[in-house]
Length: 380
Figure: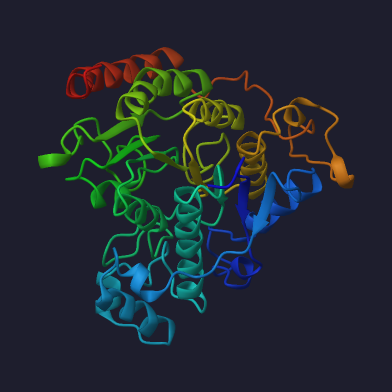
């Protein structure tokens, strides 16, 4: 094990070179902009916070989860073949268009997360951030929700197959269905997703009664949230349900899917969060003292997503003092959106996105249900 292992940020220009089509809401420039922001603010480049170039996952590695015939279809689709069989596997839809570079991007994103998992397992990193990852909707033989291959599953599988207990904490506004399904009958990988309810958002899954089955019963948790959920409500749900389960499971490594589509103003979701709540949760997870693999995910307001991920990196890389400085603009960078120009943190949202009383009651019901069904299984 490396003494005082560093925080590692995984990046290559190839993420941008294999961009999704211009009409797609999934913008790969988020990755480069996050990395450039981190570098400009002095959060990358020293021995404690290093940047490494990822390598694509090999076909044999990807086949740990994805069916070989599906991977063949991906390649054939990229080379120009399109028919009903492709559509049956989710290809050629508005969410998963066929484009030159989709296989390369997906393999690279998966390779980065698997590389991060290896660095953590070998003690060569304390935390790893792959902002190009978090492709949590893809299944063994289908694409969905901008996701063609599932890097989260592949990283968790690589760790679990080497005897590591893995906790997958998914904070994306969309339910992490592909990840959940992969481990639904296993207990060595715990999946917990906090997301906007499937009653109002794709993929329409992730309800309180989805808690795993067979040997995996109790090792899956979902915290569906109502439209308009705000920071304090999100934070309370985490502290009441996710945090006790994290402690009880006692993972060797934590994977955090850091989709930023829960931020207020995201065009594809309906939560009302600021990036402060993600920073607070990451700081909490760090208290476990376990290695962390963080990935990207959703986030369709690009400037807000970039700031959210840069703030997340500031927490993961222990640059906690910098993020509170309202004059932050190291390296000549002034970070700004339409509302707030004081560094990385969003300002507190004072306006309501709806009836907070109704939101609180809905979340309280979810919490009560999970406490009754899951906590006894784990002796909480």
